[in-house]
Length: 410
Image (cartoon, rainbow, N blue to C red; front, side, top):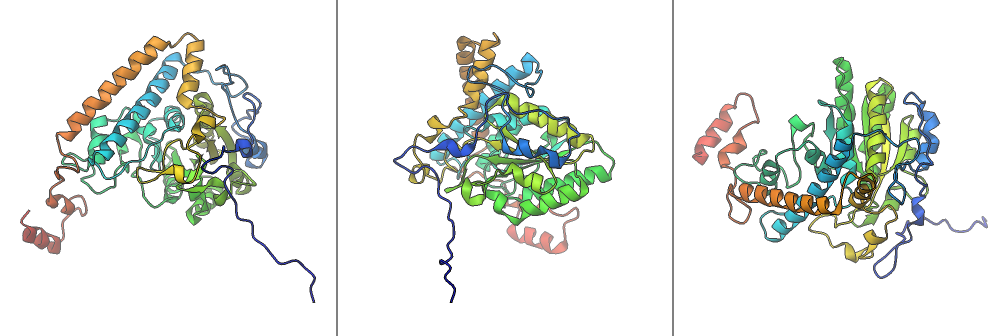
């Protein structure tokens, strides 16, 4: 008879729970400037070290150091800071509107503003992003109408999507922002397919897909990696590791013993692991990956290490599963504060300008909200006409739908 011990399973646990301080040592951080910057034509198999370390540019004093420090125009840096501030102000205002029952729910990107903002600025016109529901900063960087965004949240008479999408699930083709899907991980497959189509047509546009750490456990994630590798698709595959998928920690998705970036290397895809709260690192890594894709050198998977500072959504209470002050202890800090420190040290920003910009943006967001609410909110029931359900579905409306529309009297 066998003398072996009974088999057991390992169930990952978060390193912090309510009432205790999180141990963030599992993040395996690197010092700013330590990660090397290889040429864009590096073989995917040779990026293993970059998938294990952490690309960082801004040090603790706000200085840009190391080989990844990009040469960035001061106007772009200032625009980046303003955009991150606008995104955070917008999020805070929309949460209040949801609490006032003007919309059904909302999802903020608090603490993640640098990722979408810097990434958008690194792409070219015509490139297409396939985002999830926490990349509103992509739209902010393209200066998409705040009124249109809020009307979509309110599902009112002026909603560009005519009430057909849940709040925060925007669709803005002109800004390179593909329709958000509530089914997670589909974005990766769609992005790879779009990038392949661009190559088949002989175009120069690239795709950028977005996914969270939790959604890497979906089968679509692995399918996308296979197609991206086999066909060397011109695509950037972004994994936003914000440490939490609703109420389960990133370790349950496989991030405990190996980085998410390492999965790219294992699939034959060049990979980077980047400080997602470092605007300069995000911009530099995004430019590197975009150049690689546009030069027919294949896909890049980037793991953005950040922290979801707010709830998963307005339906979530994170104090039930993690320490309430977790974000204040997160070792990569606040992306807005870090870029502000850098600009101030360079003489490109001041406390007075920061306060003035804060008030200016708050006024702009409030004005946009008031304008959008003129077309209705969830509270007053002013929604798109029932006739709109028959529109934009078929080029030529079938006879049975014509009859149904007549029966509705619309």
